[in-house]
Amino acid sequence: ALHLSRMMVLNRLQLDAIACSAAISACEKGDEWQNALQLFSMMVQSEVESDTTAASAAVSSCKKGGRWEMALQVLAMTAQSKVDLDTIIFNAAISACENGSEWEKALHLFNEMVQIKLELDKVSYGAAIRACEKGGEWER
Image (tube, rainbow, N blue to C red):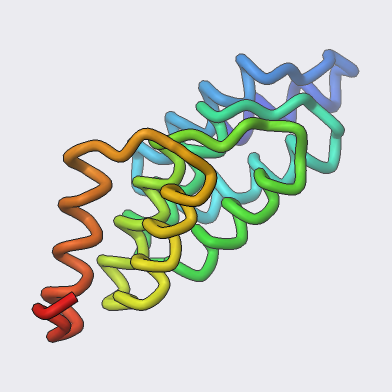
């Protein structure tokens, strides 16, 4: 997926959100978090209009790679762009923090979802609860 994306650029074909999202999703499914991040960065640098699908896949690939810090960076980059943050990308970021035993950051993201009035679902609650459990914060 990364190779094909690079070939598109070399052949002066314009990268678009659909192609980038598909490539990032392929990297995520293949546990290639570094390549997913590279593609996401390429997407941002090329000023390709990113979307929630690409951002969510990039965050999820970071989660799978045990890189909660990178997941939060992707979330921050997405927030700075014109992409509307949604429940799926926040859930992926909360899960990344949960996997990294970062319960405080997970709860911060959960509370941010409440503040910006995003819909909380079973995944949101479950990931936040598991993060607290891993942190020994059962009273939260």
